[in-house]
Image (cartoon, rainbow, N blue to C red; front, top):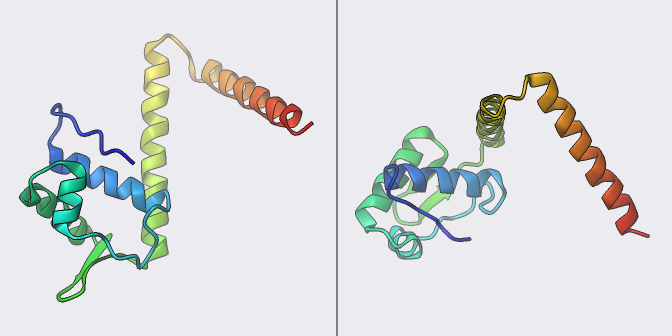
Length: 130
């Protein structure tokens, strides 16, 4: 999966967000070993020091832990991962609602639109299996 880093925000923050997303989406599972700093830095096309800074911050939060000779691993605390997933989902929904409001949609209009779209997709799924 591409890293898609850009210069409008600090790179190490974007790295943290990318790894968090990889964890909550299941790309990295609880207890999985992360690639080395150098491997991740090369994959993301960033300086290893920048990757180290991001990984250190992830360690500080407890999402990643380090074993001296074995490398870094994803936490096995499923509750922590689910909490992060829920927090990120709430942030995305809040941002979506704010953007819809900027477009002139009231909350009720937005909910109606979402209902309409999800029902259409459900209909599409039903006809796809025929």
